Image (cartoon, rainbow, N blue to C red; front, side, top):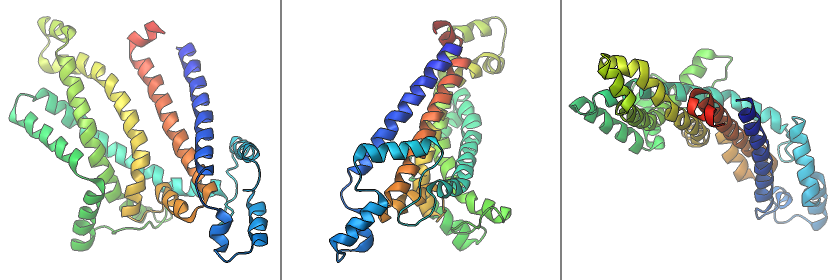
Length: 314
């Protein structure tokens, strides 16, 4: 287990390095000039060159990359040349909205998927199982932005129970929770529907295995075999899907934060792309990429710890 952990840790470090090179290179290749975007088309060549010197964009590629990656390793994301604010402090501030939103969405997805997925598997040959399968397909098919607009129309405009958008900050805990309720519901329904189908398939497949039939032959009821043997084995593939969905939620918040006007990481990323604030875009994309790689690393480690077949093959 220790050897596997160290091996995965090395792969994680290599992946982070490759991702940093890719992110920096691709953003450096984007057309346009930050100095020109800031000073406008009537700027003199001298003023443009002076601003490029200030931004550091006229330095060689390798020098700029080493300066950026060296700062990241020290926890310094740099200072935005356009807004003059610390990129690191901006990202941390936005994570205060995005992380609670993702955790709430994933918690809701699990609360939906686990009981309904198991029930759909147990009742797979009954009208209840068919109805639950159809319900999960509807949940997957409904676009998140449309569901968000529908919830705003019903709960904010018609019933006036929840705010239509915006975020009051965590100084007002009640207001912050209310602001995150509908966005978390949208994320939870979409991801819960997807996860529910995987849970159903995993449980149905495991219940047909020989060791379950052996347990039934020894006198266990169907529900006892499910609780004692099937759920643990069905959890292994679900863990992998759960990790992938958590990574997907990071990207999904870009849409949801814009629909509900939440000042999170996804909304900041879109605004920075429009403003050509490349240093903030680089820092934000790198944080999102590192989060996805870290989630995959943790999923692999947990998967390896849970499945004894993998431990014996290591």
